[in-house]
Image 1: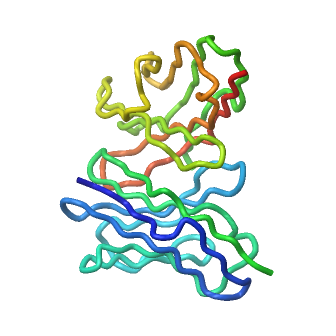
Image 2: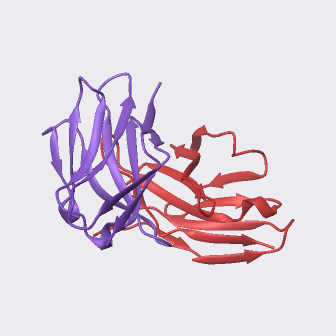
Length: 111
Length: 113
């Protein structure tokens, strides 16, 4: 059965420092994996996706994620945080038409 | 760029009333979904719909909820007798066949008074 675990419910980083949001998944076979961002009072926006091509995926706003099958992880990173990155981030796994959301990680950016 | 649309953006209703939330998925997509997000909480899956029938539903999706694709474009969520705890943001999504991503609508904020 599929599952998604976002290991941190809250992450705080200082502006200009690296961001790491962790996600682990379980799946019967190679799934599709996504990261979505939700800014306050806004809808869900796709940041990036992995669909069995390159394991290092680049997304919008300087974010990237690496699919590591051996670790069943799909962590989201950004080299330098910006104040506008403060939002809720969701890791999502898709297997056929079954889609599972992680519980979300709220990213706080400290000035 | 194609997009999923939802109407209305905000719906206020009295407890016990019926509401219908409307969504227009992307035209060539085949899978449709409803999610809800109670204020300050995580996104929760409600139901998925494929080939004119429900393919999966969560325990939240009880008998007061129903979905319909009344024509070739709309996908609706009906809540038969609203409760205070139904107040939430409701998101519609659609996908092309695997492995593509879900495209989300902007959401409908439902307030039950």
